[in-house]
Amino acid sequence: MSLTKIVNRTIKSLRKAVCLGIVGAAFLTGNVRAEPEYEITRLSISEPNVNIDYSYPHSINNNGDVIVEYGYFGTGCNAYPHPLGIFLYNSEKEVIRKLNLPADVFTNPAVNDFGNILAESKNTYFSAIYKIDGIIELNFYGRTMNNKEEVIGQYIYNYLYQDGHKIISNMSCIWGINDNTEIVGEKTDKTYAWFPAVWKDGEATILKTPGKAWGRALDINNNSEIVGQIIERTPYAVDSSACMWDKERKFIRLGNKDDTSAYSINDSGQIVGIGREGGYLNRWIAVSWKNRVRINLNDYLSEDSEWERLTEALDINNKGQIIGVGEVKGMANEYAFLMTPIPLEGDLNNDDKVDFKDLAIMANNWLENNTFPSSPRGIGKGLSK
Image (cartoon, rainbow, N blue to C red; front, side):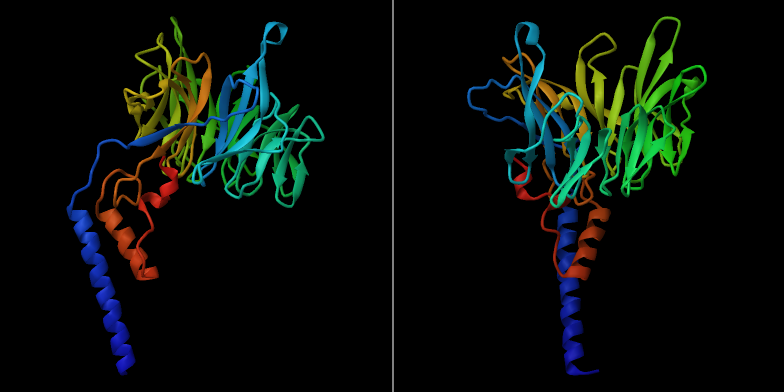
């Protein structure tokens, strides 16, 4: 063996030893916490000569970009929401900029990981995809979009826009789509009862529910896990339950019958939605589920927080960032919030503990790239405010 090969092999062995030594020290500290911690930011703007009465976050992508609608309420006969426009909040740079896009009550804006935006068309009352190199008119109302620029939406029929073509779906309503072109929503039967369903390759499959309960599927992640709600009728009440279906399509109830609804699920299986505080007759609260255990997101508010109550969690990305709406102390209406996880040092797989799994991730990264991950969970410093 040549001297050069001996030296290179020795250096590589030393690097491996140093890597495992450092990682081992981090592992032996036993960093564990029972629950994640968050920084909570109100997504606010200042518009000259205009009082912002409300803000609503429509979508967050995996880069931490949030589409937010701001507006005010009129008076008298005009006492309804007046959108001021669509804004893009970049959580890494902590800046908000107004997009040159129309805002309308029919619009449900969304942003994918490539920065493409689904919003109302400037030229029609329908939706369009706004890209760096142009605009794609859709001729229907878009609901959301995936990273393949596939859009689902509705106008008379339910549609999938794919590869320049508009495909009619036989679903009764469609709500979510993943990057594998699996679409979830609801489908009615001959009695007009509506059931949660998933649509793939032109075929709709009704999802199992207990006792043939009604319901809707609202979101699906890239692991084919689905979340939504079911409606169960009893002699005394109509109960709504947040639920999920795993990739084998097994039905799982997420807690009690007052959990109301699960809106969004990320690829790690973290879920967000809306629930009741203390039972069916009490007020709305923003909730999340981790490992199928419900968490009241208001538990993360400090005593000196500006927030009176977080009322609804609307979306979650793969970094665990949550968007939703809540009530601010001393203000009448609801405003947009962003919750960003505070990293636990050494926790690379987002399970709030440092263990052998993190040890393996760090060692593998070193052996492949001769570097450690730049920061826990892949979150840059700019994301924690």
